[in-house]
Length: 193
Image (cartoon, rainbow, N blue to C red; front, side, top):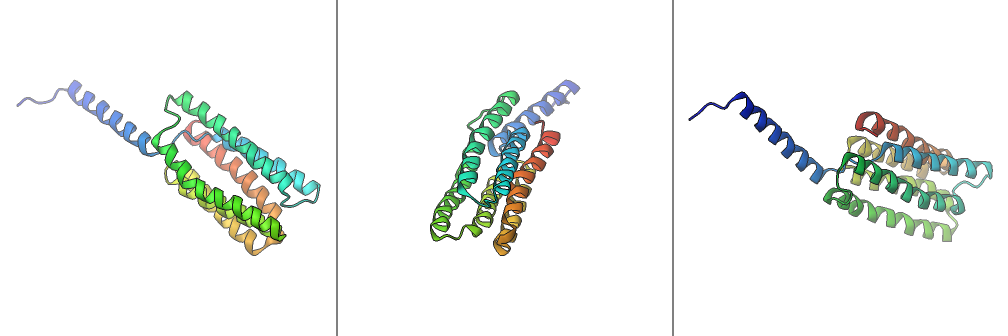
């Protein structure tokens, strides 16, 4: 039996580090773009400003286009970050994120239609914030810790908005605008963009 040389030990450490990175990338989605969240937050702030300046609150003519615009923006930034990090874009982890977030986002869409048809649009901000928070929290279990925290904060804002519907618009601005920007900047600083 021979004693491993310093070079053998170094090679073993490098191999273990490679295995660890490979396993983490297979189970965790790390290419969340902080700049993408900042851009989405900016869309949320603009939507809130438009709603406030027109005294429109949770008007679907403002918030639905803002939500639909945010999807390709976030996707483009995440794809760009994944390419820069040289990690696959459509991994098992991102498929899991999509699958765990999709049901809550679909439920949000269905509740939006039902609440709008019933004329109870005052409940829309709380519904949107809470369900988005539920989806982000679930998806965040497969991503960086900041995303899970953001999901929980959205849930809290949603609960407050459901209990105090008159605060809906400021809470939408705080959530879809402020939280996205703040968490995005945190990811930029801690996770390389």
